[in-house]
Image 1 (tube, one colour):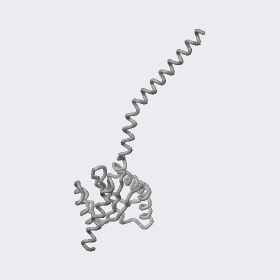
Image 2 (cartoon, one colour):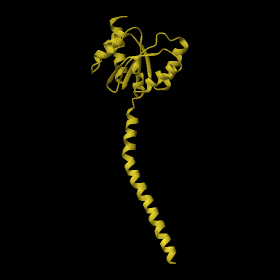
Image 3 (cartoon, rainbow, N blue to C red):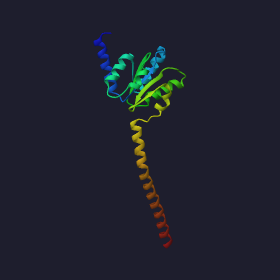
Image 4 (cartoon, one colour):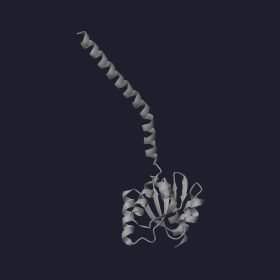
Length: 174
């Protein structure tokens, strides 16, 4: 590959990484054609971009990005597929589904999610349990609404009781 072509590929990888919130480095070399197609289909349905990259080009692309990705460099061995996502836990859930089916691959090598680096396949459960930004916002809103709901329900139930007592008293006088 010519130097100019490598520069274009590196630039494309940098642009791809910048357009997503997080990415996973995954080993997929041992997958047969059927499993590869199944993985690609699952990634497409989950809005995950799956790209096979050369380790040296990905290394150079990571060096051009803002931030420290040096913890990921040791994972850039053998063949690497890049899973880019805007939902931090989506690729982890997808990989866990493959593991549940009894597949040994794809294997998580490393991930960069929510400005944190995860290295090793043993981090898959931790990554799958990460909540997305929208899930966290929903949790905060639910927590903020619960005291207000309690006050409203207490006022409503108290008003109903008071109304019942007044109605009973008015019926007694008549």
